[in-house]
Image 1 (cartoon, rainbow, N blue to C red):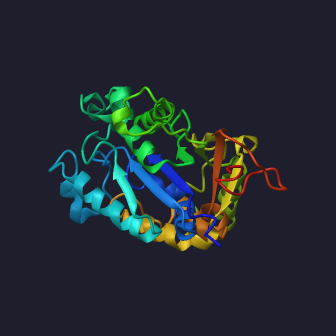
Image 2 (cartoon, rainbow, N blue to C red):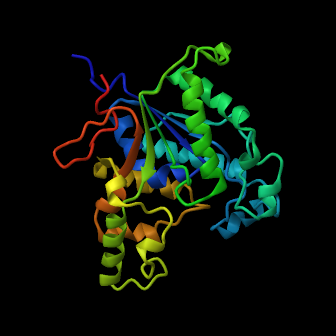
Length: 296
């Protein structure tokens, strides 16, 4: 009997290196281990990121401006930790630059992702979709999770490319038309974050994160909007290893990532999504437990 997951193909569209791990890393590792073809498209190299490691601070955008190449290496190491072999940069390395936040000089650059022509940015993703032919695509919601311009643009590019890829008349040289069956947006339920913060406080955590009100965090959504809950807790270690690979950007020793110590695998090993296109097939608790549910 053939492996039932062998023909499963999952495409994720993220804005910067490390974004893929935070919201989707455990799911990526789980589906890759099950034999699904997992493809990551990262839209920028994250050149404007703040650097946590003093010994590579000279790579920053306001110094040598070489952080992008370093973060590409970190991304490769993270994908190795997750067992993902198919990862790409939208349009090739450096095709679209990290935009930084609204109001910053980097956001005014003509080559930044935020200011890219939508069709120009979507076209290379159409080529990937038609090549890989994924049944499932994951990206951010229309607010980009928390409002970062590159996350919003990644959402726009992914949603537009999904439509264009299904139109046979659009650039046939990019491959045969393909209609993605299901599209998900990443999600983080309010109740999960609230429980995590309460657990941190109970454990005596006095960090800024523990003091936050979940209602004030822009990436949190109401529980009723969450359609899909993927229990990939067996792959939490792979997710944390991948996050550690992004050492210039991420420290997993406290703050948000301390949730994994206080809630076990629930905070980071279970990942949540909002189905916005395709068949919905819920389990007994009312949520999907498989991204490929309902696909024949």
